[in-house]
Image 1 (cartoon, one colour):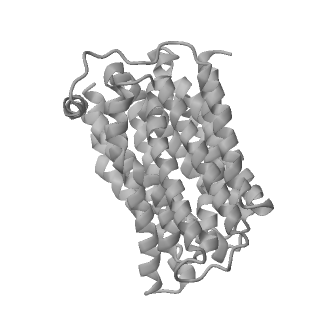
Image 2 (cartoon, rainbow, N blue to C red):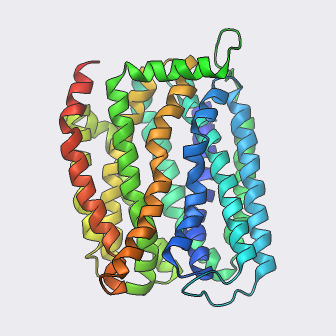
Image 3 (cartoon, rainbow, N blue to C red):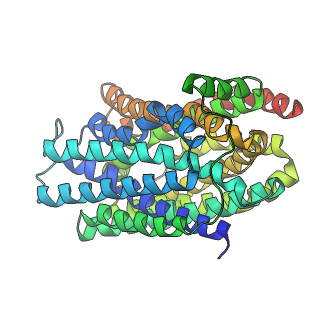
Length: 414
């Protein structure tokens, strides 16, 4: 097995665990409370570390063996999921979820803590993994390698994982978290077998402020990277705004079971897989500028259409179209970034980029819960649950108009 295939397979195992958790985090939170803000706090805890820890993760990634960093973070995530499974097991059977407050405060706080630990480890692990990929392929093959990587990650994270997570929730709640600990253990075995030198070349150790300043300095003179970071950040914010609304919308407006909801998310994965596999061809045919402009433009109606989806099949098609546009964008965006950033700076610049791009995610989750809560004061709850979709659709349209020219100018300056 080649190093690239081993690396991709390991990412597939960790993303299988993440995919199971996509359904599990939000669904079990909705079993403890029906308050949209309290439901939102669990995924917020999972994503908040991207804002808090992205910069330290970049410094650490450029100082240590990146393979060992990945192994350590996968071990930490496996332990956190095992602890969450134990906490759920002890709390069973669960009382009915109240409209205000939570039914099991101890379990709720345990889930918040576990989600924060998993999210923190993910920040370090993903930053190291994204800097590791260019070690396996030449620069001209990055689009293809990223497409292969994301097709496997999406197959497990958004196709198999959510469906499996929904089934496990129906069988026994702790299984949805316990299986993840096993998946991370298998991923560690695969990463441990990677041969090579994965510690970046760097001069004598310097103060962390100096090292971080080098990363900011590089990003400062790369207007294209700054534009891509901000676009990705605001798009992620808009994407996360629908997360809480779609869980409650699926349960209350569409009357979907956990299994049906998981299959709806899996429909989005099919679109994402298609986007990751076709991204290289689309970029080659249209060029990177037009590819990124039109994929961003096409995402706006996908968000808005979710508010009008009458059933699970239609909602799945909306997810598929949205994920297709997002993955084609990512194939071009990440490959461009990996080519532009020197290996010795990869961890730090990547972390600053992802601070901008991923740091918006918890804000989007909070805004999702707030939007629904405020909308309930103006309209019936069934309509209030669809408001985040409309806000995301309008926001995506405004974002496209704001950066259309900046994308073209950025590539022209390369």
